[in-house]
Amino acid sequence: MDREIALNIICKCFAFTEFPMRVPMSLSLAKTGTFAIVHFTVAFTIAYLLTGSVPIAGALALLEPLANTVAYLLHERVWACLTPRWAAPAAPAPQRTAETSC
Image 1 (tube, rainbow, N blue to C red):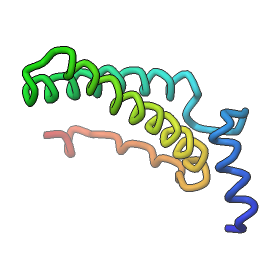
Image 2 (cartoon, rainbow, N blue to C red):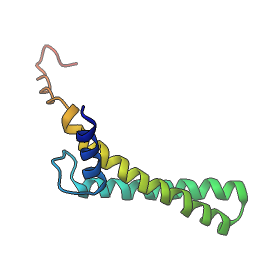
Image 3 (cartoon, rainbow, N blue to C red):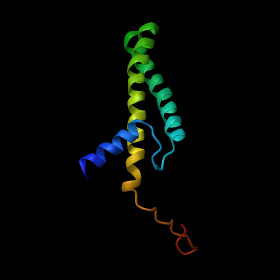
Image 4 (cartoon, rainbow, N blue to C red):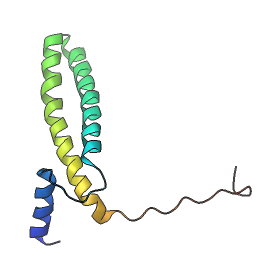
């Protein structure tokens, strides 16, 4: 792939511009939101178990997952941009018959 084309694709993904994708922005945001909730919960629980302090656990649970959640959204959008170029059409599911059913 030409370097200019690759950079153009990446710039469009990070700029959140309209670009033909299989995954709509609303789905990426929903996935990012649920990922953030899970990540904050896990981070707080581990930090609390290690420190025994709610304020320290809360601070740790806010800093690292916040940065990781932003990174996840950017990662998700890059994958959404690149997926149409790699994805092959899905094969239809085989039909079950009486002879092939368990």
